[in-house]
Image (cartoon, rainbow, N blue to C red; front, side, top):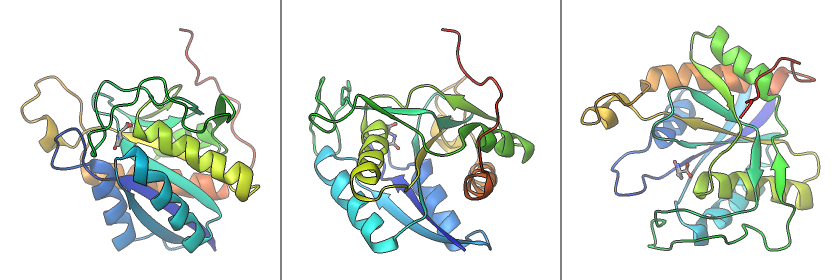
Length: 215
Ligand code: PCA
């Protein structure tokens, strides 16, 4: 049985909720039968996120790490392709820290590609009836930061440990006062994540289908 470390984030930017936090709690309460699921909720601070992440990896000895976080405004489950070595955001973290053009890891590689079968995961999520796509950018805030750090920790300390990341839309209640903005119900997020985890833990080589972006 494979051990999956699933991470989510605390609320941030003044919000009172984060769908990734609800998602991680829901899956921890009702884990997939054939997986040992370890859940961790990460603080939205540059100072502490890496420490909590590292402790969770050390404690759970996972076979794979799957991070999740909110990407408000996106309509689908976004399976991220790449983490880049930059922190740069217009908003502050939950400790009031703003970073502009700071490397996640000074001297680290420019980027890490997801080590998970991202296209097989997108395909599996869609087959479960949930909108999904490959995303070519995880942004440059805490989600990218944690995706990059987890990939770096894997590369330098746990060779062969695959790391990936999925961004999720707002919950419906978070867009009640944002007309026209996309959202996804928690049950749908859970269905999609179950499919993604099943694909990530079973797929061998990834599907060869176009899921890129022309521009
Ligand atoms: N989303 C933010 C950070 C925490 C979260 O859930 C992001 O996309 O970077």
